[in-house]
Length: 485
Image (cartoon, rainbow, N blue to C red; front, side, top):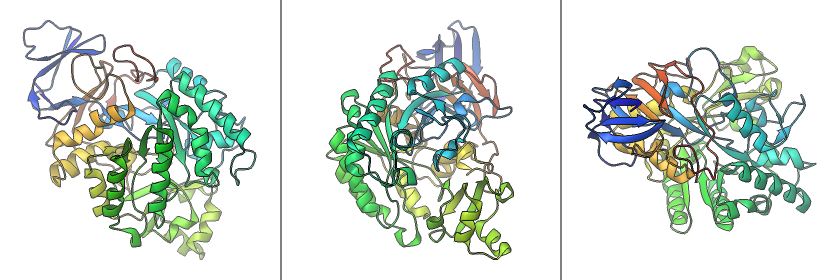
């Protein structure tokens, strides 16, 4: 064998009980699980006293551009045990769109302004293949990106011709290996899009058995109507529907997760439906004036107009400058922010739900990012599973591995079993914890000993060992350990 990870306790990602076992790997694939004491191996990794689990799958990321970069120092995803990311969420994907130096409209600018040069989605996937990402990448096509590319006036519903062009781009992307389409109907580039437009653009998903991942049109007062629209879109397309970062925003909506989860359960009895959630009671996105009044605190994460505002309280800045916070939003924009507008009971209730996967929703290019970028997965293991006992460690791992792989159709990923790709994380159940805070958001997590991506040691004790061990996971691939079904 190429590698044996020995002496550890295996939690296999299925939700089943842990077992004491060694793990044998050949050519990046798990080939044996059990007592491998006498088996020959080129290398052995001692996991005594540690948990050995499938590498975590981040169900909701905006890592489209990060995947094409190698920065010095620790990696925000590898360092917390993530081996696969789902990109292109909230309607925003880096392709297919060429801007030739023109700044993209918000929230597309959350991915930066300099890398919008992929005419076809296949060009982006090919660039990822050529670069060799740090983690595996499975990619969605953003509906808002398609709108910016094809709709002449973003303030109106798309015409039939524009819908046809967007659908053709989506069809080509699915042929190239995209998982599906994401929407961001909450955001300006897509607010004018009708339900019928989304269904028309998404028609290729039905034939390709793709996925629609939806940032709903509203997560506050109108959450019920937004959920019904999301259900209708998924039901009309007859595809797996993911409700992105399900949450309730604004104090008067705190506690409503009891009702929204009941709505989700009723819909899930009639169609294929799931959710993702991040384990924090604050959200982060573009700086929006309408969000200020809903929030007890707003932290600026970046500002093109005033870079010195990053990391500061919007309310403190407004007081210092003698203006209303909403007025300051216009002065700082384009910009990003963290909003404290959620209730911890809702977060816990949603996170614990059996239909909920874990996604960070981290924004890798914010100057002072939300700590979820660096701490999401250890926080679930440490704070919610070990300390609060919201669920068992086996359930926590399942929510971050096997459940996500099954829902997104990731072939040979997410479970620690023979024949699956050797994406593995070794961690200390007694000490694993997030250290990233809102004040110091890029701190390494504790307790993540080693991360293997496709059988290669990629990260040890938080430090990158191999920054190019990942692969592009394309829909339709069938090679063991490589593809998507």
